[in-house]
Image (cartoon, rainbow, N blue to C red; front, top):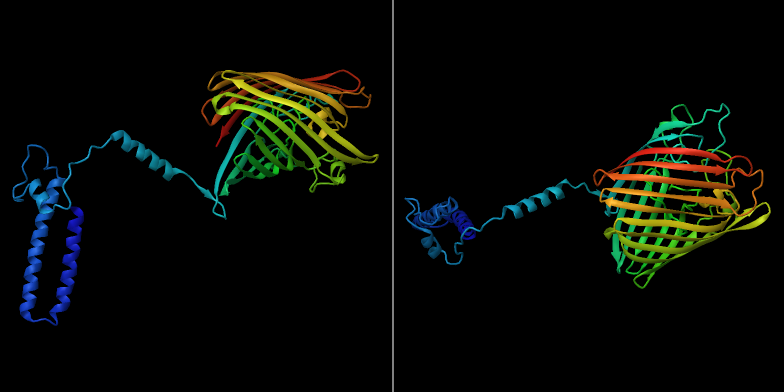
Length: 468
C-alpha cells in the first residue's frame, strides 16, 4: 500500500511538471482538461492517505468501525489495491528486540584500531602491581632468583612496590592466503632496567618480550621473530613472576630469543617443532647497561643454535581437561679464548590437568646453558628441574605449590659464587572478575656457594593485575 502510494505521488509530480511545460505550447482547452484530471487524481490519493492513517492509528482492531468521514473500511482498501494486500500487524518479541539492541550497542561501542595496511589490530595488556618483602639480600627485589652476600652493614631485608612488570601488546590479523592464516604479535613490558638517577626506581625502561609473524595452515605453522624458545616451554604457575617466570635459575630453563621455527602436527596428538635460535651465550658484559649488542661468545661462533621438541597433546585447555608432554633439546656453540665450545641441553616437560587438579614440571641436563638460567647462571655442566601441583576448587580460585633445584654436576670450585640453587613456593590466585586477578605468593630461596654457608631468603609478594 505504501509503495503504491509513493509511486502515484511521483507520477502526479511528473505529470504536474509536464503540464506546466506543455502550457506554453498547448491550446487553453487542453490546459483545462489536464488540470481537471490532476485534481481528480489528487482527491483520490488524499482518500487513500486517510485510509492509511486509519490503519496506522489502529482502527483495524476487532469490533471497531472506520472513523467517520473515511467512508471505507479495511476491506475496501484491500479491494482498491489487490497488488498490495493489507496484512495484520505482526507480534513483536520484546526479548528478541532487546538482544538486537544490545548487539547494535556493542558494535557501536567497540573501539577498532586499523593499521596502515588496513589490517585489524587488537590492543591488549596488563597493569601489574606488586608489593614485595624480602628477608635477605636477593639479586632482584620483585622477582628474586639468587641470594647475594649480605650487605656490609649486616642489615638484610627490604620492602618495595613496583609496576615495572606491566606489559602492553598488540596482535595483527592478516589475510588468509590459500588456506594459510597470517598473524603477528608484539608485546613489551618495563622490566628493562631503571635510569641511573635518584628516582629511577619508578621509571622502568621498556623491554621487548615477543615480536613475531606467524603463518598457520591446517596442520603446519611457521614462525619468524622473537618468542619463547622451543626448549622446555612449560613454566610454573605464578601471577607475581610475570616478567621472568618463577624458578628461573632454580630448575626452570627459560629464554625469549629471536628464532625461525616450523611446527607440524603428525596425527591428532603429536606435534613436532624445530628451528634455529640466535646464538645467545649468556655472557656477563661487566656493565649494567650497553646501548648496542656486543659480539660475545655466542655471536662470535658465527652459527645459530638448533632446538627441537616432540610433544604429545590431548584434550583442550578451555575444557580444563588436557595433557601436554614433551621431550626437547638444544645444541649450540660459543667461541672463547680456548676455542669453540659446545652448548647443549636435553629436557622433559609436562603439563596436565583434569577438572580441579593439575600438575606440571620439567627435568633437564645441560652443559654451558647459563643463557637459559641453567647452571645457576654459570658456564658449567648442570642438572635440575622443578615440579608443582595445582588445585582449582572453584572457577575463580586456584592454588599451586612446588619447588625446584639446579646444581652443578662437577665438584664445586672454591671460587664459584654458586654451586646449587633451590626454591620452594606456594601461591593463591583469585579472579575477582574476568579482568582483575589478585594473588599472594611465598617463595623460599636458598643459594649455596662453592664454599661457605648457604644463603637463604624469604620472599612475600602481593599482586594485583588488571587485564585490558
